[in-house]
Image 1 (spheres, rainbow over the protein chains, first blue to last red):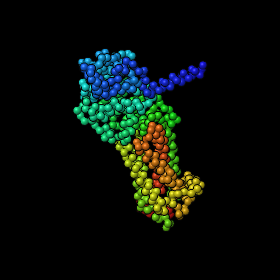
Image 2 (image 1 turned 180 degrees about the vertical axis):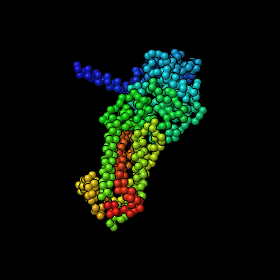
Image 3 (image 1 turned 30 degrees about the vertical axis):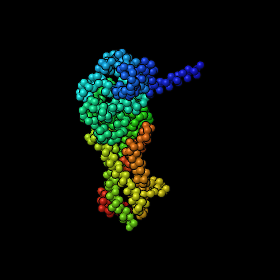
Image 4 (image 1 turned 120 degrees about the horizontal axis):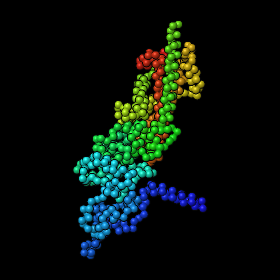
Length: 318
Length: 204
């Protein structure tokens, strides 16, 4: 009996760990299959208005849903019509539904106690001050960065920080590294990111291992991901902001990570499991040992110097 | 002694000056990197790292030049110690710690020797043991972007950084003692080094 319980606990633990790493693993919603039959692919089949002719049609890119990602996403347990109008249940969809406004995050999450831990109000306040809000008052919405169909709360458990960073950066790169998407909201040409980050000592290493927002947004104490995106000219350019004992990354990227204590007692040890940040990860123990040893060397030299001068004086005087 | 009058040829003195400037710059910039702070820094950390990397790469060439020149000239033979060096070092250490204050003569006045046993052991260790360790670990860290295969490779970086710092500390200690002992001989010692008049006999 005891063994059975142990086995059950093991299975539950392994299930939890798997679900933590691979998203929510929601049960498939049978009602959604009717929608996904067309919306999960770039081409769908339909019939002409008179119902006589079978046709293959292209699905607009914004209407294609990554079905597998949706199942694992944070909203993956919802039926499509819980967010979209019931009118979509009929095909072809009534044309006026096209003009239905898209839901914003705050429509469901804003001002509700249940979602207070996500600090949506702070996020909105931060976003309003961001370069995105100022430059694109009407065209920029939460959706530009966060796709509600694929959104996962990547940083909540931090089982895989590297994957979480990739997800976070993808939402920036989706426009800033994609001219087509970028020009949907701006008339400017997107910057060549690799070229503009060449001033960094290891540009690729930085771009792969920290979030864009860690340097390009104003750090705050309430939300894990800052939303006050700064203009490029105001981004962090001082390396020592992160590469120092009081590393900014400990307050942002590694804030929710547990420390990795070791005998050498490293500063900013939260980063150690995942990276090694020059200047930020200093061994306090080694610093003390080296300082003491260096002082001892200097003391020995000064003592030697003292006896040397004394000997030479005595020798000179005869 | 005649066989030591050319113990400090021009190439060696030029190399020593360049090497000294490079090592000193590397120690200072290395300390600034290790103890970087947004409050205290006058020069940007990016500049400091650039100077450190530049001097580090230059030092690799300087080190290779020294090793090759030592191999091609007689100079290398003055560095390589024999097993008796440990015993001799104790005698030399005793002289520095006690004998010299009692007016005892220098224990090793062998005309074929350029360095006393402690110098020989220290110089050999620095140039043939610590310098390659510094060069290899520094090179790995400089090229970490190309060498990082997976997340586990970060451990290699951590180990390299640890070894690099320990080796740098040893070189810093060597530098302080080296400078002290050079000054101990008096300012005239530097004149001898610069104007190539230094021989074993004159150094007595």
